[in-house]
Amino acid sequence: MSGRLHGKVAIITGGASGIGAAMVTRFAAEGARVLFTDLASQQTAAESLARNLGNAVIFRVGDVTSASDCNHAVSTACELFGPPTVLVNNAGTAIVGGVEELSEDDWDRQFDVNVKSVYLMCRPVVPLMRKAGGGSIINIASESAFIAFPMHPAYCASKAAVLHLSRSLGVRYAADRIRVNALCPGTIDTPLYRSFLSKQADPDAVHKMVLAMHPLGLGTPEDIASAALYLASDESRYVTAAPMHVDGGSTAM
Image 1 (cartoon, rainbow, N blue to C red):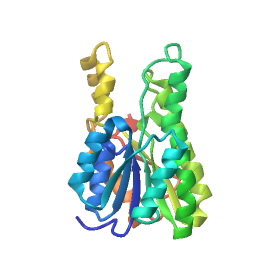
Image 2: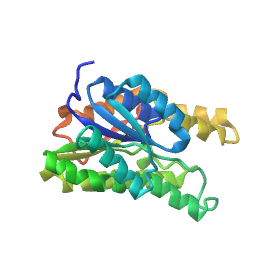
Image 3: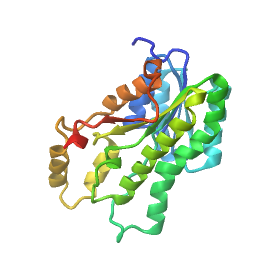
Image 4: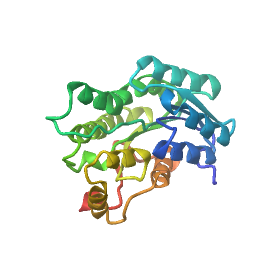
């Protein structure tokens, strides 16, 4: 690797599997020191990933809907590596069901994990980045911020919120040289996607429908990690408050 993140300290939420694990791996390979978080249920996989990547990567159990857990992750990164210069708000969930089927708890959970977590992580990180002279915050939005998928309106609404929150933060903190962007993946072949398919009455039919919406087919976690690497690096120093589509052409359909 070329060391494009040499000297940077990154925090990545939801890093135990899928897109998160690909970003942890790629960032470490490019020279970053990385702290990543995930739920206790993912601890075995997360600790194995951290162990395989060496001393520049550490894992901490954390729930992104908990302010104390978010604060602890940031303080731990500062203690072990120094103040974060990259934050990737990757943790997310997709709750399937129309507004008639979703419970109020389901709705709240969708927004707590996908949207409130961005606020909870940015709140302690922004002052540290300001003091350090800048940084990059990458919020994982989705093609669903632009496409109205009928099977999960709460997810679509939450990702649209992530997109506009990123725009607002990007404008607000530009003077501090803190860049904030929304990375918008298409449908990526991850455990989350497979879990979604498993809950469908006809998984094969749904999969074919999803494939038809993406001219380049399904993406891989590594595709998103490559885009995140660009946004985390100094190569994107003139990019802020922007959506970055990495969707195989879905939003052009």
